[in-house]
Image (spheres, rainbow, N blue to C red):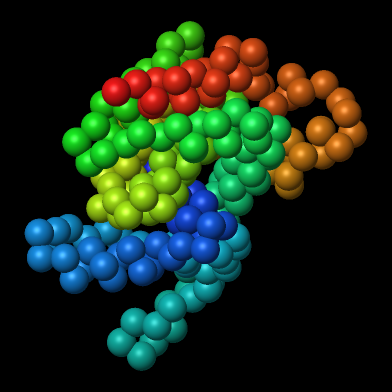
Length: 230
C-alpha cells in the first residue's frame, strides 16, 4: 500500500472533517485508547489536523548536528504540498457546484459498520464504470470524505480509519496506473492548482478543462440511490 497515497487520503479526509468541526487528531487519540484497535497506528507525518497549508523545514537536527535537506527532497515535499492543496480546492469546488446532489447524498447515507464496505464498493465501481478522469478522481475523494464525516456524525467513528484504508487501496490498485499514464499528479496540479476550477466558474468559461463530464455528474447522483438501498 503506497504510503504517499495514504498520506494524501488522510490529508483530504482530515481537511473535510475539520470543515465540519471534527478533529482527525481526536479520532487518533480515541483509537489509541480503544483496546480492540490496539496496535493499529497510522503514520501521520505531514498531516496537521486539517490545516490547509504547511511548510516543511529545509533542515533538521540529527545528534545535535544540522542536516540540510537536498534540493530534490525539498522539491518533493513542496510538490506533495501542492498536490494536497490542489485536491482540497478541487474537492471544495466540486461540492459547491453539485451542492444539491451532494446534500442529497449525505442525507441518504444509510450506513452501518456491517454494510459500509459494500456501499463504498458499489458507489466507487459505478463512479468509474465508464473509465477514469480527473473529475471522477475528485468525486472519489469527495465521496470518501463525505462518508467519513457522516460516519462521525452518526457516532460510527470506528469507520473512518476503515474508509481511509479502502480509499487508499482503491487509489493504489485501480487509479494509480491511469494517473501515471496521464502526467501524474503534476498534471493534476497544472489543471487544478491555484484554485483553477473556481476561476473557471467565476469567469463563466468552459468547464472542459476541469474534465467533469455528464457521466461524472450522473455517477455522483447515483451515490445517494445506491447508498439508500437496504
